[in-house]
Image (tube, rainbow, N blue to C red; front, side, top):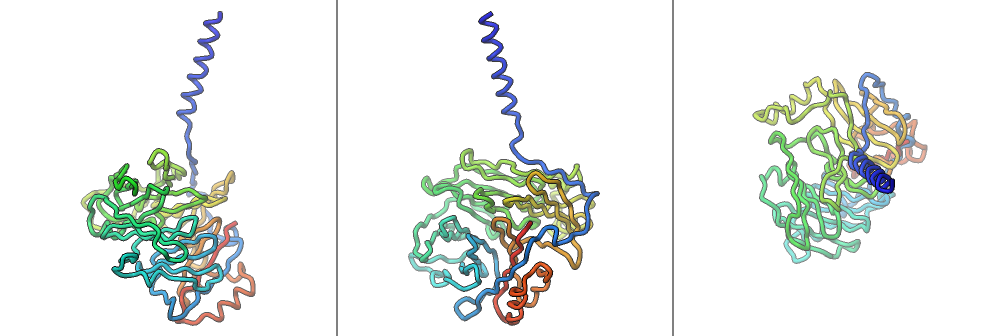
Length: 369
């Protein structure tokens, strides 16, 4: 009898172990395209505010290549040459421009940047390649030459990076994902993505930090948003968007296509083309194409809503994200594309009247519901 009890306990533990191993550790969001409705911006956006960026000879912006927001502070990659910092009111704070050069503490260009939780500015120089980090006073604190495999020039130009831990950095070509140790000066793990040899442009947010975790989205159409796992050096599914088998399967696209034909295929296909995906504090959002531009969103524990964007009512892909806020950078002549005065207070409306045509960009902030 005693042996039977022991056997029963062991069997129960084995079944429990198998159950735990088979547990799905990601969210599946089922998107019913047939239930889409026209977008009403007020249903998704609580308020819109505007932040005109200061304009003077010390902080003229040529082109915003990328932007990150950290505690409301706005870090702007100006034309892949310098990182500029503006405070939450748009006042210019500092720029790395004086460090652009060949000196011992300089950098040669800023094709990729990241900002950590301490406000450290990280710059990845593609063609050396090298990582340089500067503190809030723009003092060089860390510098690492990076030994990663050679790549094509076009892929290197699209290379991005992020800091995963104090030792491990992510270097991402469109088709290769490297976990790189700066202490060991070597690649610890490589993930290769096998898809047509074309640079996808359907996702602008390949590496992004949401709620303290680093996430990855393929640059080509993909239904999955991945979490970058520092313990296993792997990509773990975080959110999978289920379109009922109607989304584009990139692995089935003809490998002999030209770049122009590839993009034309994505625009003409009857399948759903999944674009950028965001995991915010309280809401998951996915952009996709299907005879028009759509958004699927789900609040935590809530139902999935699908909205079709209209010509006069849109929620564009943001320039930057923090918390539950979308940030957009607009030139003065294109501000109207991003604002809805019904969601703005009078102070912000009046502030826009002071913006001149030749001023720096205006940052428009959407606080989502």
